[in-house]
Length: 456
Image 1 (tube, helix red, strand yellow):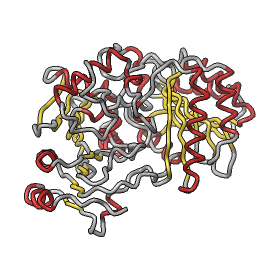
Image 2 (image 1 turned 90 degrees about the vertical axis):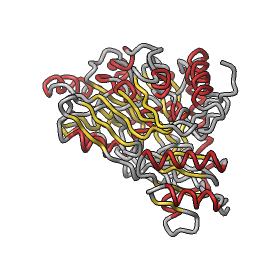
Image 3 (image 1 turned 180 degrees about the vertical axis):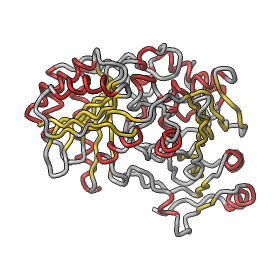
């Protein structure tokens, strides 16, 4: 299918107003620029603007409004459902605006909207500082933070959005405003969990913490022992120290061996970490022990080995409490017959500082869950799409009997008609009211969309 070209008048206007590169379908770079992390996504924008900063974003929004163009916003390009790229219309690409400025005295950092967690961690690590961020360096700070923001420091320091101090945001009516606890506080509340519904964030200011090295890495256990190990992991994490953040993963290792792994980072003292990791090591026989003292940015690179760029992705998720043996049996049954060696299951463990933030303090929901259960469907051959998607849906359905309700929108492969369940009715209606105030025409709709036409 050929992309629908943007109106020539819109492109001419953009050429006269923006400093960033403008890419149209006839350009040699077009196909590469429109690609995102999920290889299933093949959308074709009418025009792409690679913004250099807030001024370019402002002009893009104004031109899109004038010419009634559909708009998508790309930060890191990790949207599993492909919200980063539109068909026809205007793709506002922030990936060229990636600067990060650290203030080591105030322990804060300001990052532009296209920065990735790799960009961010590289700058903050030079000062022995960090904040909670995604577990892949290529993930954009924008999409992750605006949805809440889970990561391997969250049990000690909270979600990414809990460390957010202020944002600069371009609104649907073409204004650049600041949102913080003191200024446009209602918008600041909604941006911490409500996703990209309310504007385009062009810069983020974060609180930083003294984290330089962690005890981190992977512990891998044979699948034959996984039933007992997963149960031991679940029980242990119910009372684990805040310094330990981790995820349990059912995966297939290079060479085809199926295993259960614990990806972990302990940000406390080495002595405390050794005691905690020593307890984890006793859960069962180990296939591999790859846990050691490492720079914090290094632990952020490990998950990239399990999710390479360009393969086909379809995900589903839910929240769970205590993981029963019946739930583990379902997980193991499906893992043994996973149709792709890249497909895996994750128990992303919460608690600690995540649960201590008030349920209504941010738009982020389900802070009291013990784990997010995520089915990461990944494969390479497009002819297997139907089979692979069916497997993910079937496994998710089989696990619903153990769900505590809700889901995390960023991990969901399809959202039609169910977004209210992610936030709960009361919080969702508050978000609807906020959407009516800041984007009543639903200009920003390629996202986990909150419809301003609903009751509030």
